[in-house]
Length: 371
Image 1: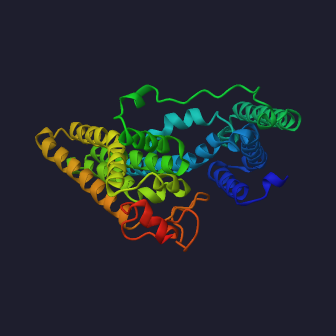
Image 2 (image 1 turned 45 degrees about the vertical axis):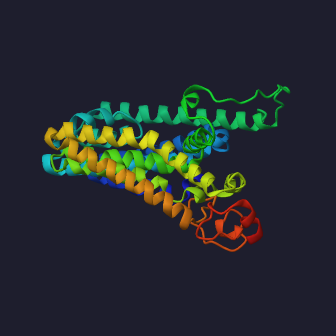
Image 3 (image 1 turned 180 degrees about the vertical axis):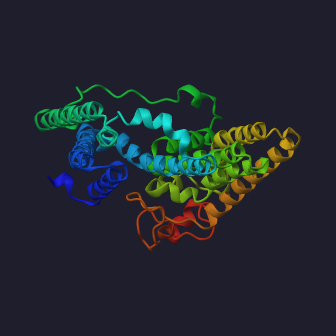
């Protein structure tokens, strides 16, 4: 019963009641609608509980936390598709959704609402079949939910089991990492690319930039309202990733700072980070530009648009490197916020090291005296 309390169940209930009122015609349809609303609501709740129980251990792991961050991005990016879809339906009408509606009316919990519509049209056999299908799916979801709950209560947690004492293997660069330059440049590039893949907030920022940078120019071109120069949106979104490089390191910044003993080391550090970003941003910006040009058929302006996109990307990388050194700000490691107030002496805050406007360019000895 606790699963039926909250804004989510209330919103679902209101949507189901509104759907029944929209399709019900006659006393028999409203009577079936009462049963249909109850069945559909229980199916939604049971589905949510079954999915949550099945993924409890996943959501407590690092991959689960990454998935939770990216799920919000899926919703945000999906809203862009909904926006373009609504615009298209507004111009062409809702009649093109009829084939999809004929299929969805047999998928629970929509089949319960379909039963109300069937009763309104006098198809009592179809309505009975749709209600029976909804009830069968509800029983299956309850069984799955109970099974996962039993497993969670009786099976041991993998985090409490011993790993068998297997010796750790020495980690070496493998795959594409072997193609990176030797020395500090290659090491910094590999570390930056690993942050992009492993750190949840960094990964979320990259996924957002890659997706929005492609959606905006391509969908505008698809609707016939775009321009080749809209492809620069991808370069702009990706160039933002160069800003606040040292703040993105959070508490790991101090390990980086200990390896910087001269302005040359700081220069190589920033240059390597920019090169790592270029491995992704340069071909992606070129891909978006060429794809947008192909959709619009304006090949004459491709060289100009491509050069403008690369120029914007290079300018943002250059200004991002400068502002990263001059105006760093701390990012909280927990929570959804990407900015935290800087307090003197707070861990993870660049100012707590006694930073000057040249945080990474001062020799190590001067930094230790200032701290």
